[in-house]
Length: 251
Image (tube, rainbow, N blue to C red; front, side, top):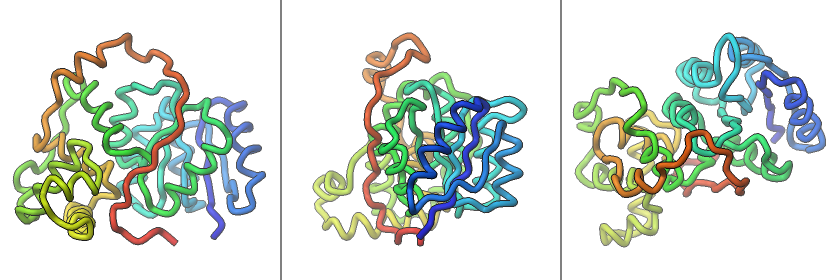
């Protein structure tokens, strides 16, 4: 399968660097470049890429709003957020909007290529524990979102609700199975049903929803630990693929 990629970044040098890196891969085709969020939306509608590399901060329309528009229109296109800062409230808003993960802009070329392949096959790029760390850091300062709250969760069985709670707390499939004394296959089945019933892309979206509905509350001690200067540049680290959510890969 050839993965069709659109690069959206307001810096010409960054677009050129990503373009050069990706064109060297036999299974990746760069189908377009965009200098702002509005161009990213227009070109995605026209070119139908498999993955959009989306800079989070761009003029005219930022990456968060562009992600929100595209995620609402077509769930087949996966969006990978590019950001300069590891701990950033914009990243959480992008995950809420429908992004499948994020990367630092100084990511190594091999990590960038691997990340595109991960999201193209339908997997989440971030481990739920990483998503929760971000949510714990910014849950108190982010604007609230309007959800259907309890009525949204009424579609779930008691077992699925327990699994969603543990997913929201950053548990892996294996940890959930041990906690609930069930088989790993049962956990995977529950997660697949949760994603289908709640119309979620992946388990990262499930973690965000668990916070937004109040099913999981921010952890005070984690928030205290993360009280550091905002937008401080973090040391580069490799991406962390999420657990298999039991859904078939995107072909």
